[in-house]
Structures are given as C-alpha cells and as structure tokens.
Image: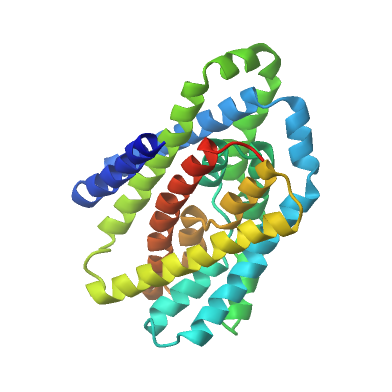
Length: 317
C-alpha cells in the first residue's frame, strides 16, 4: 500500500514543482482549462456508466447524507473559522484572517471530492449529488454567510450554474443512459476509471497552482506569513476531517456514506471561490483574500489523497 500511496503523492509533488517552475501562461492557460474540462467530463461519464441505476437512486434520495454534508460545509466551517479567529487573533494579519473566514463560507469542491470518494470506495452517487448541490447552493449561500461572518453587507453572486450542469451532470446522465450497454465494459476496465480520477486531480492541481504562481504567490508575502497561513489551513483541515469522521459515525451512516461525508464535507472550492471573491470584494483585496484558499486547496488535495488511498486499501466494516 505504501508503494502505491507514494507513487501518487510523488505525482502530486512533481505537478506542484512543475507548476512552480513552468506555470501555464497565455495560450497554455486556455489549453489546460480545456483539458481539465474534458477530463472532468470524461470522469463523470465513466462514473455514470459504472454506477447501477439502483445506486444512483439511493444516492439521490439519501437526504440524510446530503443534509450532513451541507451542514458541515455551510455551518460547521464558518463556526470553526470564527472560533479560530477568536482564539488566535494574532496568528495572522487582518487580510489573511479575512481570507480564512471567506474560505470557511465557500461551497465544497466537485471533481476532487468525487474522485477521492471513488478512490476510497465510498458512495460516489451521493458524493456527486451532494457536491454539485453544494456548489449550486453556494452561489446564493456564500454571499449571505460572508455578510454574517464579516458583519457587513455582501452583495449576492450569480451565474455559474450552467458550467456545473454542462461539465458534470450532462456527462453523468449520458453515462447513465448508456449504462445498460457500456456498464459491463466500465466494470472490466477499472484501471481506466482510476486513471480518469487521478488524471483529473493532477490537471486541477497544475492549473490551480499555476494560477497562484503567476499571481505572485511566492513574492506577495514574507515566508513567515505564508507559513502561518499554511499552519492555520492545515489545523483547520485537521479539525474538519476529525469532525466529519465523528459526524458520520454519530449519525449511524454506513461506511461508504461516511467516506462521502469526509471528502465532500472537508473540501473548499477554489474554482468557485475566486469568482465569488471578485464579486464580494474590491479588486485590490481579492488577491490576498483568496491566498489562504489557494494554500488550503493544495493542502486538502495532498491530505485527502493520502486518506483516500488509505480508505481504499482498508476492508469494509
């Protein structure tokens, strides 16, 4: 297990290193964005082709798991962020704390949450529904939460639903429609599905880290402040991972559902966070506001990659 785990983490580290030295720029940004869209759509198509209709129906109708994940995302996270700010006000500068609080108000990721749930042998159907619902609701909930947490008015965001529908739901539905004909093929070629999961994560890591590097990630703040932000992000993620595990067990959820709660309830979306920040904050503040999110995004990918491989190698309860 350790050898397989190390190989995937080595790929993640190498991807970050390449993005730091050779970030995509200009036309390359468009190319990698298109590649990410294609790989994500392909991943959802294969997931739809593999999952039985019964599993999908159970995932859609599992309101308890969806409620648990939404509460973790939009209630537990903001409370933890406010609590950490109250307990350690001097740990970070004011702009960095603002970024941390903003991070706590964001929806979950979609593609990486589902990919890690799949790697960990969790409830993929429920993860697809919950993560997608989180992103759709986040368009409306996040501005309200920001207004409450920051104790000021925040204008609402709009748009962003169609890309989610076109990139995620349409391929998944297409896979489901074709499932009676290609479902057997998808089951026989699990390595292809695994490659799709991991490949999409690596592409997202490269594009996201490239954006952070080109925006001056390594120059805008001193190393000590970046270290403190990373420490705060890691501490927040550790708390959330522990609490989502407790939520799953305390709620009496089955193991696949507990895995989905952990990976959907602990994530924060960089893809949604940056455009939402551009609506809610002044242009001069956006860069610093999203920096804690950028670092958290990388930490959550590394930590959850390790956790997903560990869960995937364990025997079911």
